[in-house]
Length: 91
Image: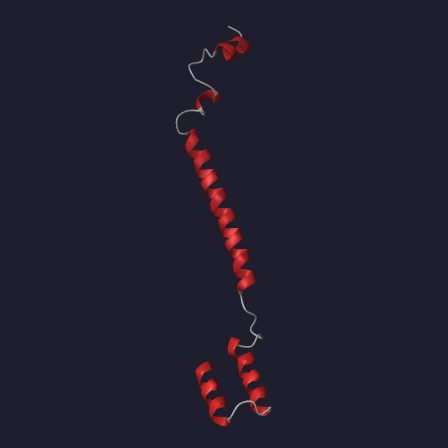
């Protein structure tokens, strides 16, 4: 029997792909999809984390509040007692 006829008739005993398309081939597809999803999630999380990092030169969050209190104290809006009380609240 010619080779072309044997391939078309599937006379060699294998189903398709010469035995490589059998029962466990679906596992590679699932593993690749899981790997792809994990890779995408990792990339999104890594890029999100890069945006959220604070620069070392940035002041601490309460620094601006202390500046405002100092300005109000210097302008006479706050008494010494009120100023000290509010500064201690920030710490």
